[in-house]
Length: 227
Image (cartoon, rainbow, N blue to C red; front, side):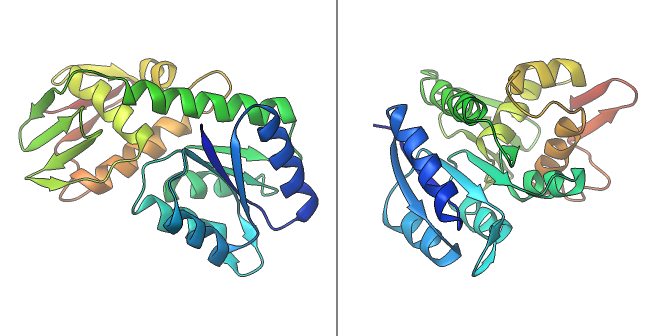
């Protein structure tokens, strides 16, 4: 059964999310703060994390960063912070999606199912192929990439994006194509999403992310993975 961790300090919201997701057939574990959330993640495996940013004993971004450093499951931020900079900060820290409060229950369920579906699709990929582009190797079986033999530590969405580019290595790929393939209609729709994730990937595979040599920008169009 799919297990979801809900990290939320407000008791009513926590219980509402727990009841909502349990009603959809998910196993739900809840945590009210940073320490409790990290303890839960350390004790058992989760398929997805719903994470509030404002917690009584610390910053939700810290939780996101700590989880992402060791785990690949989707993380959806759920927060009252609505500014674009806050959303971008969440995505850059390793979250896969961002939902603003107050939320619509159907939207939360749709976003959760979209992220789980994407993760399951990656898990079902039967091929164990490795796509190489110079020192970069994109490994479908690992759902990660290596650069010079070193694991990049990609998140699920980062891997999807890089895998699409690797399949078309040497060719320019439009931002629109990447957005259409990697983000669902239920997710936050912004052209900035692609740029944020490209920057995150560059930080993991480039010697100098500000002067990329592997994942280059095609001005006015999109991106190209060098061969």
